[in-house]
Length: 80
Image (cartoon, rainbow, N blue to C red; front, side, top):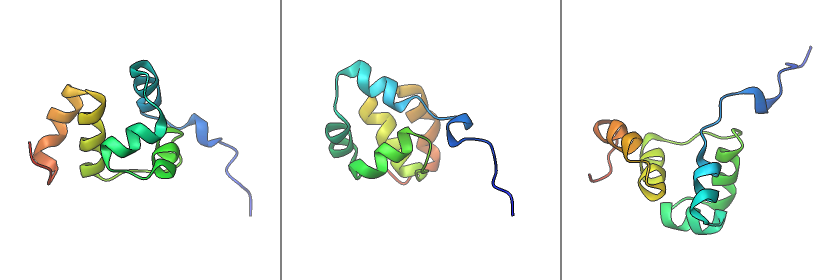
């Protein structure tokens, strides 16, 4: 059986880490504010794990990504 030669990093990865770093926040701080596990958030930032719509909405809210948050609002169980 052959392995897929496409590295994980070639997959599209949301720019969460870039936004977090631009805000001057640590991974742990961002994870705490968004209610996520820091290890899981690290994997999400690297494109190695996914998130639910609710987690994505909370992360967008915490990072100030208002357009993304607005787009996700109808699909999220989180309060608006």
